[in-house]
Image (tube, rainbow, N blue to C red; front, side, top):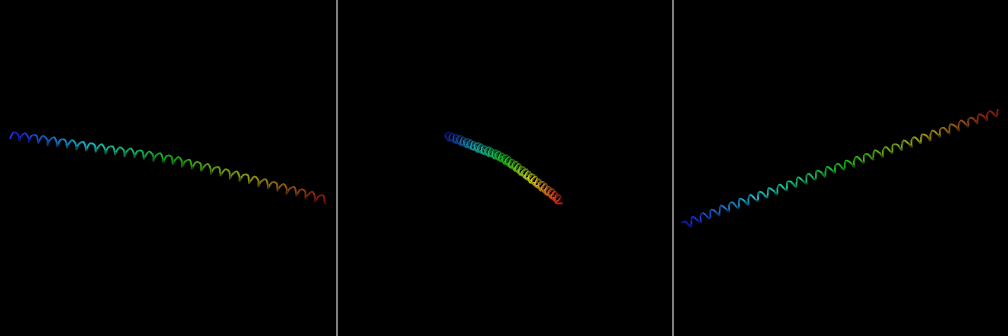
Length: 121
């Protein structure tokens, strides 16, 4: 009987120890899983942050390019406009000179004609 009781006690002790071991193992597994998930979450967060930063920089770069393009276009149009104005001015000047020359010629011709008529008389 004593032997049986002793064996029973031993069995119970073994069971208890087994239970404890299993519990510890479960807790360890849970802890590792939690750690793994946390790591994954942090990694995801880090990648998202990086992606947003990259996007922000890209947007900034594109904005800069767009402004530069706009500025160059404005400059080009201004240059074109000035050139057009200059040509117009030149053309008008040429026209004026031509008109003046013609006027002078006409007057000269008239004067000569008058002189010639006077000589005839």
